[in-house]
Image (tube, rainbow, N blue to C red; front, side, top):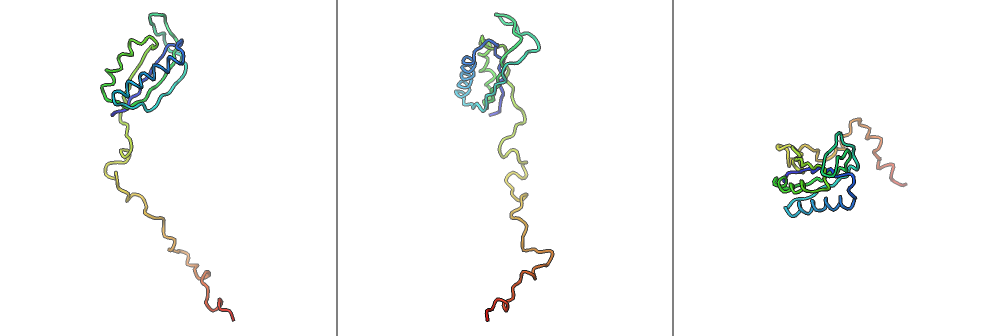
Length: 145
């Protein structure tokens, strides 16, 4: 299932409870269609570059939210009921492209190959400076007379 981001621009007069209720309805709708909501972000109140005209006036501010999800490609057609939602000024569904997950991060030729990583740290027995003689203990010195 490809990942999607749904951007929701609410009217500035919408109460927080109604906003959360609509996002919860969208999440339930996605889950009923075997999708998964991965993240919900609120960007708070935003100033718009132009007024959005609706039946109850023109709005120059809005409350912006993002719902990230993984869903089937038919989700775009299924979310068109949001057009009739009076709490929303605009909504937009964006499909994330070229997103890789899990083992897809590794290239195909070395996907499960661990040979690129060292199997053990450098051997500590390889002594380059040759000063081991100072650590050798003579058995004769250890004998007690």
